[in-house]
Length: 472
Image (cartoon, rainbow, N blue to C red):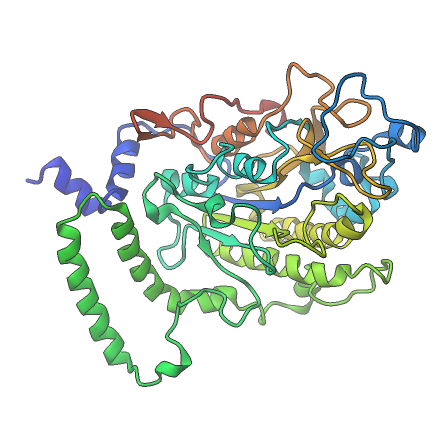
């Protein structure tokens, strides 16, 4: 016979067992439509008006003095004349969805996408708004969505992490690793950073070249000794989830030494796959002064790596575009020049994202893989300077694809300017996006909770409803 506490330790280990205890206390919630998630995060605030949300009134009124019909407090000084989209829009797919020319590659898969055009935020400050989209709260100290999914569903592959983060190669976005922290959840649920295409994609996974004196037997002996010491240390500190996570991370690292190199090696991918993801020039035309091919390689490589991780059992992959490292801008915060900043980033993103959707679809994986494209807020319909746009937290666009999502539709709409939701009483909020994703994974967002400071915390706080209109 074994008591409940011993059973939890043997089954889950440390505070990880608390997650098991929590889930054991609940019956199965409902059949999932998706098993895995990819979150594509455009850091800096992508302009819905120039990419996805076509506003003829801005074309008609371009250059006229902007009049919002109410007092507007701009983040900087972006209340110049009305500004038409930087790129021409045209219809795509059977749905006839209007897309800006810079994201035209998404036209090939637009009938698999559900666009949400009435998403509204709470703040025009990058750090707070990024937290809100990544964690459901606009302040630090809360787990990322991938951590919640990891906590609720666990791993599908014991040799690879459950939650993987592919950051921008130039640096972290606003808040850095706090966006994918496990916070008060067991530390084992935090995101694991992987940098595709670099000499050392996973930091410190293998011994450095200078340690040539380490033999396989020495590594085995050291591992056994470390396991013994950890076990003794752990027995006296059972409530420390960080130690639990550290032990599991060492164990996982040992398994990853065999599994990760194969998962991250794209050299064996067929030429047509590499070309589809933008890793080779393929004759697409674009102004010479905008180096979109470089961005296509960066973003496409991460999307291809994401597909390889997903098909090997990684549960949640987060792909970041844009960093928080000043000038020249290589993020989506286009105060000075939308065309210069959004041009290469958006074309590279569109090529990689379209390839990911097509690739998952041809492999039969799109049906149970949910893709979320997001950014922290939108941009203003009026001009900042002569070529830029200021922050707009009042309305912006997200889109979803796969995983039981109805494609070829648009949900909600912004007003004639793309300044606020057309229906200001019933906007979509990030809580609704998160609730819908959890629902498609078979999880009730109101019941996936963790007790913290006498509060049953959850990803959606005390808000959120499933967006039934976009479900297939």
